[in-house]
Image (tube, rainbow, N blue to C red):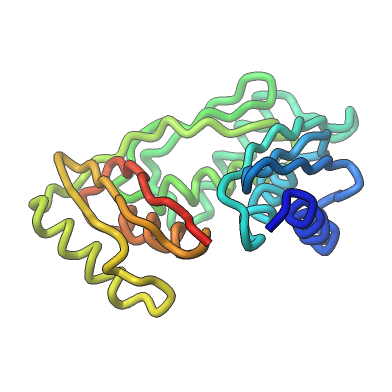
Length: 216
């Protein structure tokens, strides 16, 4: 697929997303790598644009260089924004009370402890959805339950085998002290994400090293 074709497909995907102002986003492509530039009105919109681009067949990576600029009347003080974030996280049953947030000039830093990656992801999603947030930094520590490396590898491979979208034989799994290393080649970005999500879902995983190649 040519760079021009892929650029057009990504631009069309952005256009069809009502949550994204596609006219404010410039798209460039170099060998499957998409770069997004421009200014958007929220961190959520910036994140949404990246997800839109990743969905397009042929995209191997997305460099999200979009800038977030909040309108003056929508700005909140850091203290008010932190209070809103803590309230939103408290109302979400997936987020443990051990996760905290601090805000500096609109940029949220999440700290504390969690047992699962999905808890970190949920906290990041909730914080990033609030109006006035300019960016989210995830510094939450994962505290593993402590299963053996064999148990972790086995559970990840079984999860991959159960996934109808993923060829489990194409991805190898190695576990060491809570760190999972994934290697292999998959046929789409969606397959890549499924494999990484399967790794993060295993108990005791604190880090995932992603060496999976996407080959169309």
